[in-house]
Amino acid sequence: MIRIICVGKIKEKYLVDAINEYSKRISKYSKLEIIELQDESQGETSKILKLEGEKIDKYLSPKDFVISLEIDGKNLTSVELANLIEEKQIEYSNITFIIGGSYGIDDSIKEKANYHLSFSKMTFPHQLFRLLLLEQIYRSFKINNNESYHK
View 1 (cartoon, rainbow, N blue to C red):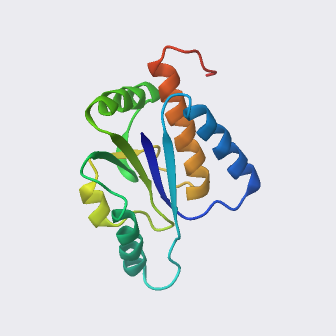
View 2: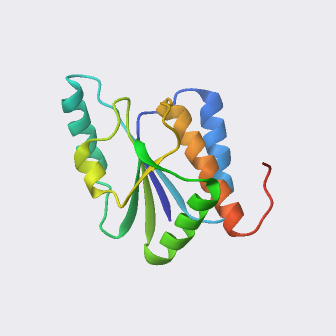
């Protein structure tokens, strides 16, 4: 199963529609669970990160292969991501991706991650990033199944 833990709600209808479309496409290949957590808005950055980290931690299991999405993570090509997903699906019952909130991901969660992934050195809105991640997961399944997909 693919699990995505994300901090923050999606409010824009066009993003909700696109996320639903890619979720439907992924369901052909794998069970998908998206866990949407309320972001924190009160307090200092360190307090917000800690509170969001505690919420994320409740959904983590040692049986999962956890991938944190971080600006300082490793950059992969789509084929390399596809290979990682294929390899880890054999070893682990779940692959869990973590998308942090506006301030990122608490260090306590980063330490629990098996892999630190970056899509770019640029910063993306977390609502839009969820769509980008789903598209890349879908692309990974297409690659792993030797199915054509637009470039």
